[in-house]
Image (cartoon, rainbow, N blue to C red):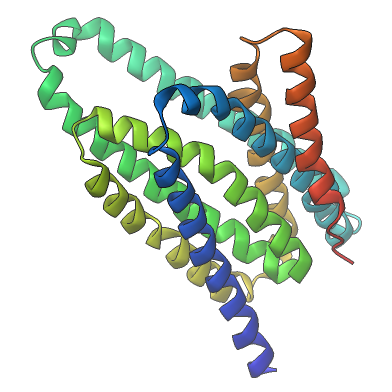
Length: 263
């Protein structure tokens, strides 16, 4: 039994490490492309990420959570709705705080522009560390539920991380970081995913009753990010050709999830 547990933990840590390297490496290589090419293809990456997030949520995470919850399906639904509303309130609060700060300190956008650049980069790195820590928890909880579910969740996380890392790199470089320095700090923050996965593995194995709710929380976070943050960025292109490409890539992400069976 100990051998099986150790082997499973090794899979979790390996997937977290591989996911971090793939997302950061892809984002770093992507930044080496000409800006015009990056601007034209970023939407394609976002579309695929949307399909991966929605597919993992509706085809795997929620069904697995409902199956494990048994008679507590109502509790699962309450957690899903509460999590989505919580993400909305949190995001609304962050937007309000940013808007309020700019109105209260308009001079900071001019006189302190250089000084605030480094500060903005630091905030991005802190936020990325927290995000990676939570991703590690989500991946570990999925692997504890089912091996295939863990793989699907990891793929969805990686698909979402690539566009996010692209944005983080862009902000860091705009804040004055060199490409090599931005890459180094992003690699450093990726360690948080391994820490989160390790802590979750040993903690959640003792409290398995919480796993269905954490899977639901994971699904809710994926759904919110896909629908609230990623999909609206695609609305600037409304032509038939652009819409067809977007739907095709979203469908590709969904289809990839459909090829992976958790049972």
